[in-house]
Length: 386
Ligand code: GLA
Image (tube, rainbow, N blue to C red):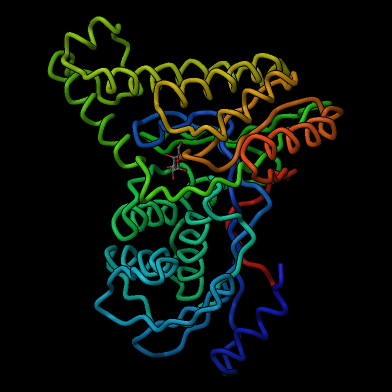
C-alpha cells in the first residue's frame, strides 16, 4: 500500500509536529465455513487475508478528533457529543470505536487519523470490521490502554452494533484481531474460545470471485435475519427451555411447527442447525486432506444460504451453479450475502480455464465484470514500522 505517500499526505493535511504518526494495519477476512451462525452461538472457520486497511494516528493534545479518508478524499473534525454522521458514514466506524472504548471507563484523548485501504468495499471481505479493529488497536497502542486483541474485537463489534447499526456477530472483528499467517481459526462464538488450524492444500487452492454486486449490510435484510432467528429461538424455548442457542437446537421440523415457528423461521433454523454438521465435515476434511468432502460441504452451504436463509442473490447463485457445471471442487457465497464474493476451492491447474469461462458467461448474462482474487492467509492487526 501507499504507506510512504500517505505519510506525506498526513503531514500536508494535519501539519508536521514533533510527534511522528504511527502506522497500523488490519487485514480482510474470508470464512471457510460457519455462515450466519456467529450471532447464534455457532462455530466459524475464518482466516485473515492479504487485503488491508491502514491508518496513521497521532495524538493532537486537544479535545477533538480529525479524520481523513484517502478513498473519499475527505477530512472531517469530530467533536463531542458523538453522533453518527449520515453524510460521511465512513467516520462512524472510527467514532463508534472511540465511544465503545470510553464506555469501558477510558478517556480517549484527541488525535488525527488518516485511513487508506485496498479491501474492496461491500464485497463480503469485511472492510468495515478491519477499520474498527485497526482503529481500536491504534488507539490502545498510542495511548497505552493495554487492551487485548480479543477485547478490541468485541469493541469493534459493539461499535458496529450500537453506532453503525448493523447487528453483526463477532466473527469478522475477531479473526481480523487475532489472525495468524497461514492459519485459520475455529472460533466458538458463544464462549469466544478459539484455536489455530494449519492445513496444507497441496494441488488445491482457495480463491475468491467478486460478483461486483455491492452490498450494504446495514440496509439489507441482515438485521431482519437476526431477528427472525431470535424469534425462532424464543418460540422453541417455550417448549424446550434447555436450548440456549439456536445453533444447538436438535428438534425435528414437526416439533418446530408445534412450537409455532413461521415457515420462514423454520427455514432459518434449518440453515443454522444444518451448518453445524457441515462445519464438522469441513474441519475433518481439511485435517485429513479429503478435499472433495470439503468442496461438497461448501456447495451445500451455498444452497442452504440461498434457499433456507435467503441471503444470496441471482448473481452469486449463477456464479456458484456455473462453477459447479465447470467441475470445480466447491464454492459458496461468503459473509453477510446479498452480493459480494464467492469462495472457490479447486485444483490449481483449473484456475486459468475457469477464470476465462466464468468472465465470459457472467458478462453475457449480467453485463457485469467479474474479478478474481488469489490471496494469502495473513496476520491479524499489527503495527507497521516506518
Ligand atoms: C457479516 C457479519 C458477520 C457474520 C457474517 C455472516 O460478515 O459481519 O458477523 O454474521 O456476515 O456469517
